[in-house]
Image (cartoon, rainbow over all chains, first blue to last red):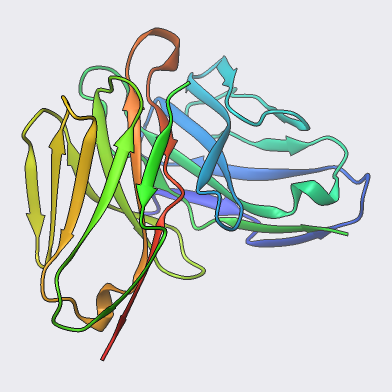
Length: 114
Length: 114
């Protein structure tokens, strides 16, 4: 029972490098999202998706891209890493609609940008 | 934009004592969630509160929701060390384009000491 799987768990980048954070879920959830967590700030929504082919911006989307080609996968791309993107990134998934439901979180990716 | 405020942000309490964490939000919402996060770990769902007057209990934790006051509380009874963690409330709006989107409070860091 894998749930939400994020890779890598840790990453160090140099300023200007690009990379992709992977997120996969095996619960057939329509809704997937990316958050970043900074000390004392709670979780802030970066991008989210309500189904394959549909994505939208959250609260802090600048510097990040997403796509959703399948129900299972929702990768987050950093286009040109900056020190301000040093953070812990969480991917989450849930059902949508009237039933809605709990968002299940991955283990997180700890990213440092030097 | 929906705002979620938690207080206190830091709580240090002795084992055996009772205390309440408060979560206020700025506009009408559809669901309210409480999550727990241990240091360096992911978020774990504790409660989902769906309607006015809803009350959920699990062990020493009890959560309630007053939608008219836009207030949820997480009450801790006879605290034990194992409850030390950061607790987040999150509010969901399920209307139109914001379907499933969560707005998080900044979290309450709870430390329980002997």
